[in-house]
Length: 230
Image (cartoon, rainbow, N blue to C red; front, top):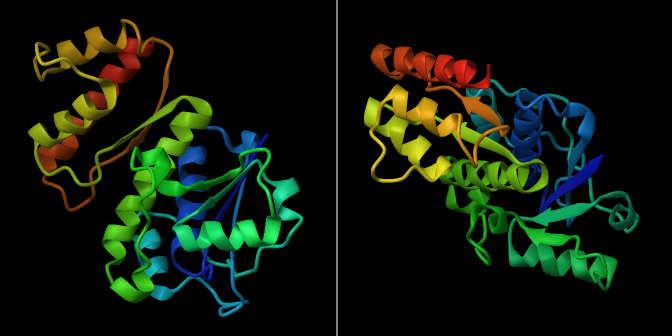
């Protein structure tokens, strides 16, 4: 089992968002039994508080329930319990290092490492008020983390509003060569060849507000994946 603890200053915005996004991705991939996921604070400012309402609303808009979550502070024993302790910014890493001391097992990381943005922070929306940007950064990091840990590719079409943007997601995630056409036949060819043969995928559908043709084409993409799998 892979045990992950997400960490931020107060455990009411960024780290619980990461906890519940990661739980959702793991559930979509059918890997619930293989992961233990939680979040904690580096400070005591918000102990016992629920997820901050704007962050909770974003989770709810994506169909993710965070009710019952209460902020808690990390403890020294967390280093032994968890395989990965993932902070949102450098201050979180410093606070973890002060509590845990040396990191001989290499367990301490920043979330954005897994989005290919090593050294970058997830800005605290408590101060920036930009909860959507923080959501996207955290989502990117969690998708990269799942790929790193389990080899599962997440195809996130939630922001797609036209057919071209659907294929932009596929191209970015699947190393789609320029000479492939943007059509279902090309997708089938890619899925039934190496290196994607045998991989697992997680799909995040276009939002209900997306145009109907986009949502209909997304269903065709799903059917193509299913045909290729068979």
